[in-house]
Length: 280
Image (cartoon, rainbow, N blue to C red; front, side, top):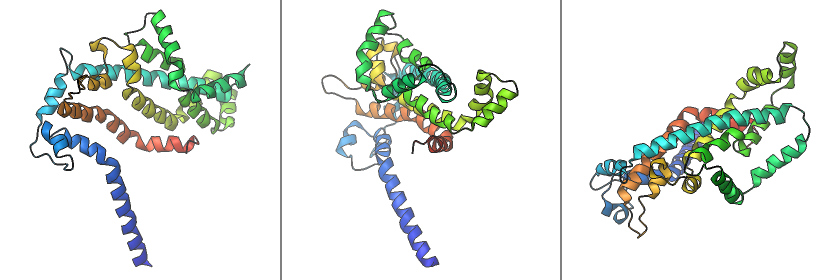
């Protein structure tokens, strides 16, 4: 019996290691290729190890273009992503609490509208939103990227938090009201602390989606000193077909670090948050 168990464990762990290697291979290839000479990246693509280590790809990539280096692109991405995460957490948790715990007029209709916007493709609202932000003079500023997050954020996050709040016993609310809390007090003192796993899930997804976003910065940001990392990476690709692959792969590798660090620190809460909101 013990021999059978040992054999099945060996097969299981071998499969998991091989599957994990297949999943992480594209990232390994990108990181190792960022250290290869230009001629080796595709000429010797099957080999992970560079024939000659080119650490200069990172310094050349960091210099950026013109007078705009990647320190500016990383700073802009950090500002936009940080504000979007803060706005999404504050507004989505408040809206979700209202839908999950408070009875008000037209609640069913508004919830149906919310669910409809979850299923609405981004391309449908792109032109009306651009016209609106152009009319108020927000084009070529961070406002179109940041302000919507403070007005409800992504409907998906609201739905996720509603599912989590519905799992919290209402008896806790009633006990808090008996002790003198009003509705906002119940939210701030009872619901918000219990929302921690779901809020961490929201933070991770909001961070990753905003940091990786290419379309919205491309539409709203025209000045080079406002560009984010995704637009900075696009600049390595010349319109004539010439691409500086070494620096491009080097800066692509660096752009992944914030997401890896965030995921490594909050992975436990991410799994817990998804498991307790029914998004399995």
